[in-house]
Amino acid sequence: MPIRRLICIAYWAFLTLLLLAPDPLALLGIERICTGPGSIGVHFSFFVVLAVVVMAAQLNLRSVVLLAILVAYAIATEALQWLVPGRTVELEDLIENLLGLGAGVAIWWIARRCFARKRGSRSTARWAR
Image (cartoon, one colour):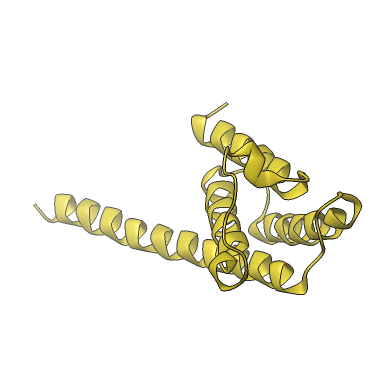
């Protein structure tokens, strides 16, 4: 199994643990973090990384299927927080999850296009000699 798939699995498991733990900060060894405006973007950041590592893992699934799985995961983990003591389901978090996925997929798509162009220009330069 390629290392990027192992990284994907490890990150996805880590994120699930954080999203469904009663006190995710305690798992990270953090006593307290400011809430309110300072916490904006936490879910977004985690889901950007998730989308990038899933796309980089190059799983044998169509991009549309991967995106559907990621969206279902974002919705399910937020909904499951209702069952976890001390956690709440928040629409803002769900929106951050989905926007993070969109941004992560966009970053991956743009990066692939840029690297493909660079590779293409290098191979074209070789043939021009």
